[in-house]
Image (cartoon, rainbow, N blue to C red; front, side):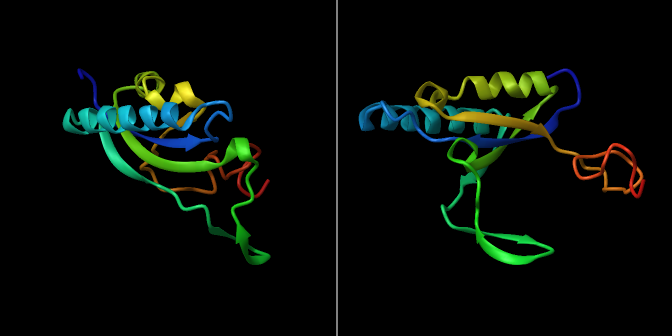
Length: 131
């Protein structure tokens, strides 16, 4: 890496292909762990975890059972890539052996800057903080 490496959150999304056999899926899983271990050893990945199927949703209405994502939006796990650019991180995600069996991966840069109501972010409306 010649530039300054940054961290990128990777979210594993979706479900295995319905027509994939258990053997095909297990092969992809085994290949994933070999791939993951190599990237961790190279300093290009930080280990995350799979997520449980249970959860809660917390908002101003209270706490409810969840998560309530559609099947194609289910988040199955997460980890971090260390890469120079978003494109480099996405290229790593594209090498994930589980892509072949139906999973997809969302790659997002980590922002280390504190949130501000005066700066447009994921949570702040584009019109401004209180607009």
